Image 1 (cartoon, rainbow, N blue to C red):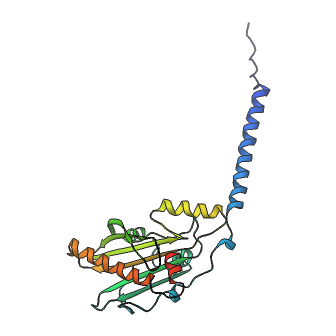
Image 2: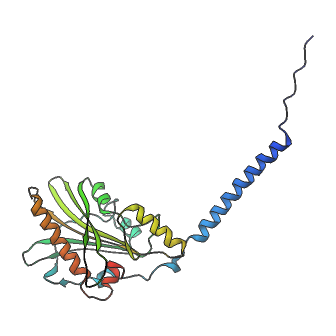
Image 3: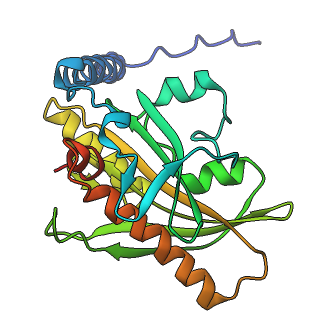
Amino acid sequence: MTQGLSKPHSPPLRLLELEWRYVFALLLGCIVAIVGAHWLRPDEAGAVPLMSVRNAIPSAVGDWREVKSTLVQMPLTPQGDRSEAVAATYDESLLTTFVDPSGRQVMVALAYGRSQRQEGKIHRPELCYSSQGFSVEGLRSVSLALPAVSDKAVPVNRLITSSRGRREIVSYWIRIGDGFSTNPVFTRLYILKEGLMGRIPDGILVRVSQIIPGDLNEEETLKAFQLQEDLMKKLAMSGIENSSRLLLGR
């Protein structure tokens, strides 16, 4: 005598209720997250007024003077020197060169962005150099005192780059809002904190660089870094209207 096939058991009603409650809670959480992200995202009303880079930088400062130069500078974005890549990241940028009485040329790059967001913010120079095939070494941070304009020292990053016979030393700082970015994590957290308060911080990359001989020893390289930072200090303390606000956030 054969037995008929048994019918599959239907899940208990209680289990179905729990499953639907879980799906509903998950769906509700997604909706809250989407609405919350939109509500917390600051609009352009929270951004600072646009500042002019060119007007805040003097053509001569101390014993340094701006000159026309044939030196080719590293691009401001990892995408290269395409104008659309720079325009998508920065509102204003300036690439120029200064020379001291001894004829030593130091390249200056300034890149300003009025709206620093998680999806669009200043690019760190080590990434730009690496993307162009340069090796990057000796990255370290030093403090640059600016007693005439600030009671806090500015953290300046130094790095040494090289590629195809070109050896270049770089000093830079990145200002985001009223602080200085010492690492990418700081930048993300600061932008997030400002966004939660309905503000969009501005930011600027202040980068100086110099091509040096490949056989320069450690002591001579240190003196070259100090030369760069002398120019950075004098630019920040130039006294031109808005230069301190632009470069230092104060």
